[in-house]
Image (cartoon, rainbow, N blue to C red; front, top):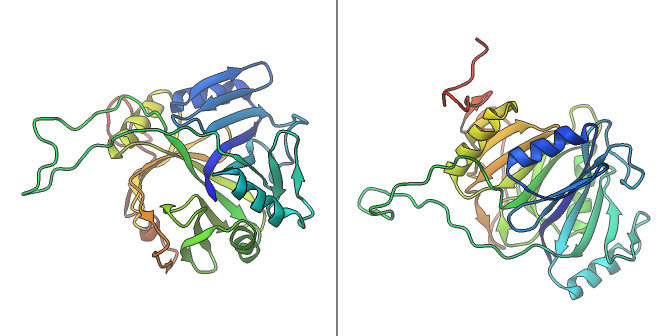
Length: 308
């Protein structure tokens, strides 16, 4: 059984700039050399950086800075052995001496599988007070000066062939469909029980595969705001947020990432089980965001950014 995203690797054009971004983003720096860097989230999910032309990197699905590998954690050796048996007939399958198995998805993205190295964690988000049912008594709600991401929650990709990619992730890897934009996009989770999605596949408008974003889980809506305001004060540009997704219920904040695509803070997504029935949605702006702030909030004034 897959447990979630264990590690991601970016191939980047400006290693120094990406080091700064991940530090500002709230990740813990574990290793930094002239030619690489490694950061971790609170639960030990690895975020790795290497120069985009490093020969140690898997092939890229697009030019420039982008995601080069996603490592999926596996619960136990029995589950890993079952995966390896399932992969054995795939022409792209390789098994390294380090115990990491690799396979390439239909878009050219390398996927790796290992016994999970993520650590258990214990965090608490803010509780809500509702009329007649106060849950937070004699205690103010938290204010965060910055975010400390807990884990890498999901990856979003533009794909060349949506049907082919869906078949690969469901039939070969065993992913579960959560919800759909028919003919346009599909939300998927890597196990029957878990957050709304670990992977979101979107039909590419150009026909070419591309990274859209990598999403980092934080505690609650207050940490989404604290992280977004901090990243704004550090000079990084918000694309959209704060806002809220009506499909997954999650609060979000999207920032342009020098590592490739966007980086997202998010919190309070729906938790699904095997009893969940996938829904179909029309792809339209109000279903992407119930509400959202274009360009973000200024970290100093705490007001919406303007061009003036």
